[in-house]
Image (cartoon, rainbow, N blue to C red; front, top):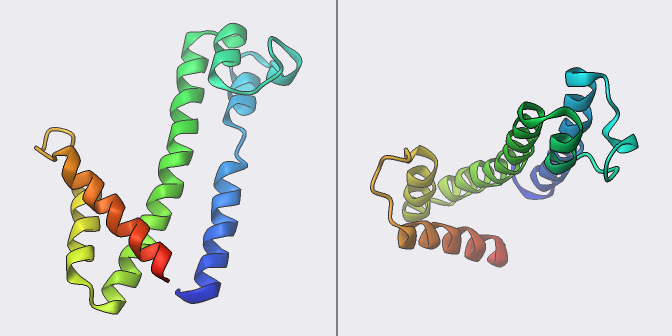
Length: 126
Protein backbone atom coordinates (compact mmCIF):
# COMPACT_ATOMS: atom_id res chain seq x y z
CA UNK A 1 0.00 0.00 0.00
CA UNK A 2 1.51 3.30 -1.04
CA UNK A 3 0.65 6.97 -0.81
CA UNK A 4 -1.58 8.40 1.87
CA UNK A 5 -3.40 5.13 2.71
CA UNK A 6 -0.05 3.44 3.34
CA UNK A 7 1.19 6.35 5.44
CA UNK A 8 -2.05 6.40 7.43
CA UNK A 9 -1.75 2.67 8.06
CA UNK A 10 1.80 3.18 9.31
CA UNK A 11 0.65 5.93 11.67
CA UNK A 12 -2.08 3.68 13.10
CA UNK A 13 0.27 0.69 13.44
CA UNK A 14 2.95 2.88 15.02
CA UNK A 15 0.44 4.21 17.53
CA UNK A 16 -0.81 0.73 18.39
CA UNK A 17 2.72 -0.62 18.81
CA UNK A 18 3.73 2.32 21.01
CA UNK A 19 0.56 2.07 23.08
CA UNK A 20 1.40 -1.38 24.43
CA UNK A 21 2.21 -0.79 28.14
CA UNK A 22 4.63 -3.67 28.66
CA UNK A 23 5.86 -2.35 32.01
CA UNK A 24 2.31 -2.26 33.33
CA UNK A 25 1.58 -5.75 32.00
CA UNK A 26 4.82 -7.21 33.40
CA UNK A 27 4.11 -5.63 36.80
CA UNK A 28 0.67 -7.15 36.93
CA UNK A 29 1.82 -10.56 35.73
CA UNK A 30 4.99 -10.73 37.84
CA UNK A 31 3.65 -9.58 41.16
CA UNK A 32 0.11 -8.34 40.75
CA UNK A 33 1.47 -4.81 41.08
CA UNK A 34 0.34 -1.66 39.29
CA UNK A 35 3.67 0.07 38.61
CA UNK A 36 1.88 3.42 38.39
CA UNK A 37 1.13 3.19 42.11
CA UNK A 38 4.66 2.27 43.26
CA UNK A 39 8.10 3.79 43.06
CA UNK A 40 8.33 6.67 40.57
CA UNK A 41 4.87 5.96 39.19
CA UNK A 42 6.24 5.31 35.70
CA UNK A 43 5.90 2.02 33.84
CA UNK A 44 9.45 1.75 32.54
CA UNK A 45 12.21 -0.73 33.24
CA UNK A 46 13.77 1.25 36.12
CA UNK A 47 10.57 1.31 38.11
CA UNK A 48 9.98 -2.35 37.23
CA UNK A 49 13.43 -3.10 38.67
CA UNK A 50 12.55 -1.34 41.92
CA UNK A 51 9.10 -2.90 42.15
CA UNK A 52 9.14 -6.42 40.67
CA UNK A 53 12.85 -7.24 40.41
CA UNK A 54 15.53 -7.81 37.83
CA UNK A 55 13.69 -10.34 35.64
CA UNK A 56 10.68 -8.04 35.27
CA UNK A 57 12.92 -5.08 34.51
CA UNK A 58 14.89 -6.95 31.85
CA UNK A 59 11.72 -8.24 30.23
CA UNK A 60 10.17 -4.75 30.30
CA UNK A 61 13.32 -3.26 28.76
CA UNK A 62 13.52 -5.88 26.01
CA UNK A 63 9.83 -5.62 25.11
CA UNK A 64 9.99 -1.81 25.05
CA UNK A 65 13.09 -2.04 22.87
CA UNK A 66 11.26 -4.47 20.57
CA UNK A 67 8.46 -1.91 20.16
CA UNK A 68 10.94 0.61 18.80
CA UNK A 69 12.60 -1.94 16.54
CA UNK A 70 9.20 -3.09 15.20
CA UNK A 71 8.20 0.48 14.33
CA UNK A 72 11.49 1.12 12.52
CA UNK A 73 11.24 -2.17 10.63
CA UNK A 74 7.68 -1.38 9.55
CA UNK A 75 8.83 1.88 8.00
CA UNK A 76 11.90 0.19 6.51
CA UNK A 77 9.87 -2.60 4.92
CA UNK A 78 7.32 -0.16 3.50
CA UNK A 79 10.14 2.01 2.18
CA UNK A 80 11.77 -1.05 0.63
CA UNK A 81 8.53 -1.92 -1.17
CA UNK A 82 8.26 1.67 -2.41
CA UNK A 83 11.86 1.58 -3.64
CA UNK A 84 11.22 -1.71 -5.39
CA UNK A 85 8.09 -0.31 -7.07
CA UNK A 86 10.11 2.72 -8.18
CA UNK A 87 12.81 0.46 -9.59
CA UNK A 88 15.53 1.75 -7.28
CA UNK A 89 17.60 -1.43 -7.03
CA UNK A 90 20.50 0.20 -5.13
CA UNK A 91 18.18 1.35 -2.36
CA UNK A 92 16.46 -2.05 -2.33
CA UNK A 93 19.81 -3.78 -1.95
CA UNK A 94 20.76 -1.46 0.92
CA UNK A 95 17.59 -2.09 2.90
CA UNK A 96 17.80 -5.83 2.17
CA UNK A 97 21.37 -5.89 3.47
CA UNK A 98 20.32 -4.02 6.60
CA UNK A 99 17.42 -6.37 7.35
CA UNK A 100 19.35 -9.59 6.71
CA UNK A 101 22.62 -8.80 8.49
CA UNK A 102 23.51 -11.03 11.40
CA UNK A 103 25.52 -9.59 14.31
CA UNK A 104 28.51 -11.80 13.45
CA UNK A 105 28.64 -10.45 9.89
CA UNK A 106 31.20 -7.81 9.11
CA UNK A 107 28.76 -4.95 8.56
CA UNK A 108 30.68 -1.72 8.93
CA UNK A 109 29.10 1.32 10.53
CA UNK A 110 29.61 3.44 7.43
CA UNK A 111 27.43 1.00 5.48
CA UNK A 112 24.73 1.36 8.12
CA UNK A 113 24.91 5.16 7.88
CA UNK A 114 24.62 4.95 4.08
CA UNK A 115 21.45 2.88 4.43
CA UNK A 116 19.95 5.39 6.87
CA UNK A 117 20.98 8.23 4.57
CA UNK A 118 19.11 6.57 1.70
CA UNK A 119 16.03 6.11 3.87
CA UNK A 120 16.06 9.73 5.04
CA UNK A 121 16.71 11.07 1.53
CA UNK A 122 13.90 8.96 0.11
CA UNK A 123 11.47 10.04 2.82
CA UNK A 124 12.40 13.72 2.42
CA UNK A 125 11.91 13.71 -1.34
CA UNK A 126 8.53 11.98 -1.40
